[in-house]
Amino acid sequence: MARFEGNPILEPVPEHPWESKYVFNPAMFELEDKIHYIYRAMGDDMVSRLGYARSTDGCVIEERLPYPVFEPLNPEEARGVEDPRVTVMGDTCVMTYTAFAHTPQIGITTIKVKDLLDRRWLWGERIYPFHGATNKNAALFPRKIDGKYVMFHRIDPDLWITHSYDMKTWFDSKKVMSPRNGAWDSAKVGIAGPPIEIDEGWLQIYHGVDDKRVYRLGALLLDRDDPENIIYRSADPILEPCETYERQGLVPNVVLAVAQ
Image (cartoon, rainbow, N blue to C red; front, side, top):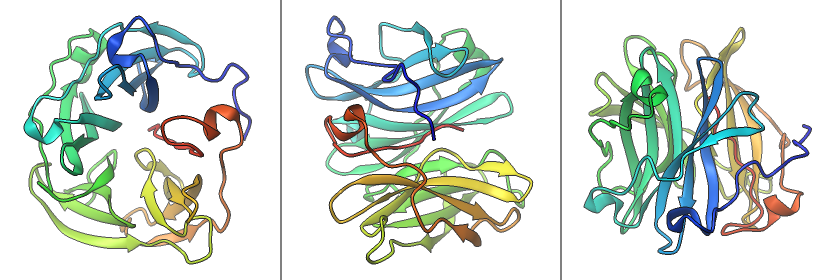
């Protein structure tokens, strides 16, 4: 994979107290021929908030708002909102994120596509589907399967799948993938962005962590009608940290992918 020569495309802004220290882990999705980013930022208080940026080509940032578009609101988010993933479903953007207080857990909320495009940050109810359980790295499939919403999530160190009719109550949670001893994904595994539907089924980019806490990316091919059935899992990583901006930072030695 070729890295963009202009990396990094987003950096901290010292003049903005909420994003003066770190920016990382964006959700990246396309609407109306534009690439939109909801990105995690940390500032002087080291509490995570989410900002917004936009690009035409996915590389050069054309617009970036000077204020956060999603902030901690509830006790479950006392230490921040982290690591968004956005799935576009019809006229609605569904955002999963990590709500962090005493423990990290999954949060889900929505915003209408029109409101996002008009920069009206009218987020819906904040749902914590596994309330109080240590859980993160969640993303929804971009369409229902057998009439149900489907979501991947991680209960360390494994990848799990779960289902819902209303995005509030989730059921049939099942472990679908575990780390591999002695491999590049030996410590834990988690999904990257939402799955992508292709001719062969579902393409899922995932991250794996080894015993030295190095994050790399791999790929899965999932059955179209039964996505807990993994048809293929890459033996080797498809991307690993090598550049300075990938090997340094709040959490060093990391590459992640969070696009839809």
